[in-house]
Length: 367
Image (cartoon, rainbow, N blue to C red; front, side):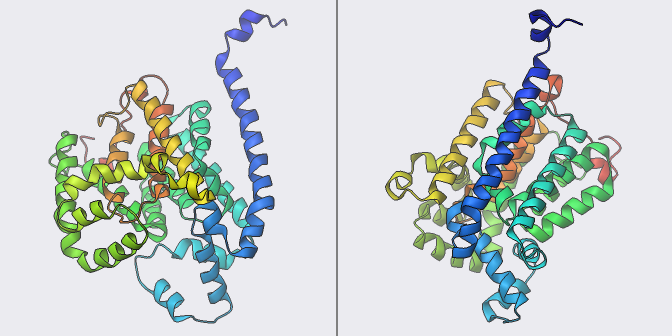
């Protein structure tokens, strides 16, 4: 059998797959090099959080305190309340007392997540994987103990369960999200509601999004005034966007929401401290923002940024919720980045309307 140039050129998908496979192998090799050259020393020195823009140093400290039964009052108080965003990473550090094994668990969680997304939506991996690897948050999520990798796992489980109408997987995804980062669980639950027959504005997505912003505008300062006030003091001392946070605390989230989303997605691109200070934390967030900007430009070029696309709608709801944080932290928006990657990676006509029945979970036959 001969294979001429015409036949080679007629199979661009296979060529792209081969290129992506080589790039993925090189990426994994890069992961292991960075782990042994930089991550291991950072764990020894207690600088992992600063070096890789994660909270791994805190999680490891808490795990060591509990393992050695020192029962530090701060540690106990931090771990005692619910919901709690410390439980999953601290538990992982406590049970798996090995940075290398934790990295392998992270890689396994990422592989499982990609497999679920591929089986649920038949996304093009030759598009999805390069976009995912473009964001440095993906790399840091694989290297260190963190919450983002389990955000990816719970999101993938939810989307797979949604596509296949497997209710127990959806509930498991909600449980993992609740234990890992309750804000992600809240976003998933909100999306379940908006796509159900219980939502009177189900077919009017812009209307519902505006209503959601108005609800949060009044609800959060009213019910969370004390918490917001405490976090505002921390935010001020951290030189974050105190003006926008102040608007949020005074029932003006409707004004602050879009600038706060933009600050998280693009703010580091214009941050002079990136070059003046030059810390790895700032550089990681800079390239996170660059990746977000490039991804959104691709989505705009493909005319995909419309609320009629479920992944974009899901991302918009998530952005409105997550932007309430008074700290500017681009990695909080990582699951939103994943959703837009999925939208871009959907093949053919599916890009126009990535809809799958979700309200069946609540008994909506019209879904």
